[in-house]
Image (cartoon, rainbow, N blue to C red; front, side, top):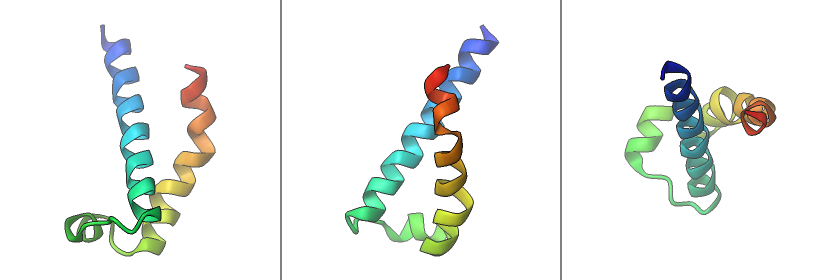
Length: 61
């Protein structure tokens, strides 16, 4: 069903960004990740902060 697929995509995004955050905290960020996200400030501002504000929405689903 399409609704289940969308839920899976949202969960996958949330888990992927959580792994990125953990890698950043433990200084395990790769060069390819840095190229994709830009600098650390942009990563936090454009990806991690907005997702953390919406994280409770994902948990309620």
